[in-house]
Image (cartoon, rainbow, N blue to C red):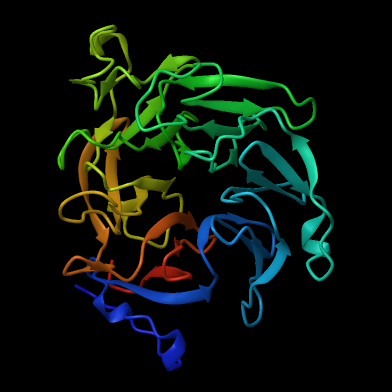
Length: 353
């Protein structure tokens, strides 16, 4: 087991020595960013959305990595996506764009509205966003409740937005609240995390890791959870066999958020093309779970293992950090955002292969 430690002034100190990783790996502080959520990489800049702060940050990758506020006063701007020099930001009902942003960090442009087609509900209304291989912006819409049967064309789905025409298309249904997705490098298929419902007990239902193999597939919400668990309120109307089961059931209440396929080469072979998942941590379980980065190893589309990768943000039922997103850097290191500690960490491999 390897530990990382980065000395800081007392006001900024983080107990990184309490974090455990597999042998050969180290973790260090990359930057301090208030309420850091989703991350997106520009050519020379890391962009970071926030939730409670209402701000979007830019961190120049050269120099002191001091965050710059490039947008403020937004409604839960969790999601950020970079394409062709422009930054796209989710703000509940709206998708915004900051044009030519890397050339204008010191005097950011006013955000322009790309789309206002999304619901205004803030319950599961914050959105992780990303551009797919097809050039469309993928935008999830969570259920406006813990458990209900909402309009399937408006809620509990994943959409894709043509940022040129404004056309919105639903590509996945029955998705309670996805706050993380990525495309498998080999197949180009969309994989996503989904948060399970509350108030069914400590250990059910699980969060899910899902795979979209064709547009329009239904993943069960609100009728079925985890592929086999009928919902006590809605499970009598439709059978679990009607829906696409998860690739992997994750822990109940772990709050699986950002996920990425590992596309780098710095980590050893067993980590190549694995899925890294930020588990934000439970809020209403009798004993806390999550608060870690986990890894799902694959052979093709088959799961080989699901195991912890970085843990230790939870100490004796007290959490000093909450992972929210992960991002693979060009050098193969892995960034982890933490909205609770207001930090971004970098995981590097320095062991023997």
